[in-house]
Length: 112
Image (cartoon, rainbow, N blue to C red):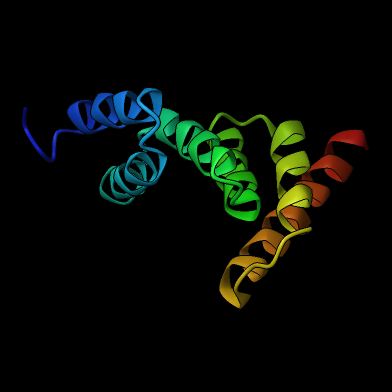
């Protein structure tokens, strides 16, 4: 296995999830998203793994990132609003607010 290869890291993390090693899987998916931010599918499984650990604020945030990268603004908006129901650090809360504001502007532009 090649440690920093994105696909190896992804499938290794997925295996860890299936084996119930959720903390380890989350750590590796987070590493994957940081090293390879365009590996979109990793955000989905990171969100799933965090959700299974009851880290719901983080789970909704990363699911929102997944949907944003897929350009699914409806589901991204739902996830971002859910993320705001849980404690977030100031930097992340600011980012969520920015994204929601941008999405709101795009929605208004499309309806005109």
